[in-house]
Image 1 (spheres, rainbow, N blue to C red):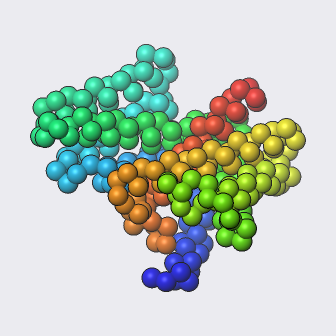
Image 2 (image 1 turned 45 degrees about the horizontal axis):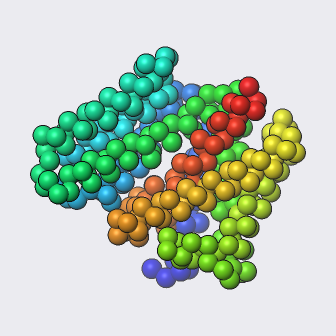
Amino acid sequence: MDGRGVIKQRIITALIALPLLILCVLYSSQGLFAGLIFIVSALALHEFYRMALPETRRLEGSLAVAAGMFCSVGLVYATSTPALLLSIVLPCLFLALVYLFRFQDMQTVSRDLSVSLLGLLYIPLLLSHAVLLRALPAGRDWIFLVLFVVMASDTLAYFIGRKCGRHRLYEAVSPKKTIEGSLGGLAGGVLGATICKIWFFAELSSVDVIFVGIGVGSFSQLGDLVESLLKRSFGVKDSGTLIPGHGGILDRLDSLLFAFPITYYYAVWMFA
């Protein structure tokens, strides 16, 4: 498919997905929102393990997805420190025992186990912060803030990078990204946070706008780079084909995986 076809497909996908996303954030209950995040997490984990594990490890990949769902639920609903720790420790012990008795190739088993454990940290642990953020006072506003800032940052980074980009940002990981585009993304993050303050989040101060705009803008770019690093190490271009014109669901989540945690802790510590 040529460039115009891809752009057209992306626009059609966005016109369908964005209204559904807005309705979900606005009107879903906390339980329904958590359930949808868990489903998204499972799909992203499935993509991750299909990229990262060999064909002979499909069973281990499926078991790791199940372990990730246990981890997600525990991270969100644990009511004590021991329960919270158990939601992380138990899936790790479970996967370690799975590989102990299904080691297959002794030369690669440590790599496969490490990748399986990485998936738990990379997706359920990070994405569960979206549910925690939604549960805060003004949680819907915080979710919309993250989405808006990330989209504004990505959009400005793309257009400024295409028009003014001259110096490569990190060619070994993402050859097309430029320093100019990255700086444009930070400016887009601040612009997005400013629009959110004016539009629906008046509680944000000017300092909050700068910190959130630059913080979320920078962490969203780092999340994108980390996923690019992982895909290059696994030898794939896209994480999947679930979303027409956009690749896999993990390709759309990469920025948010880093943006939700940093926003959650800022909201807890600065707005408690």
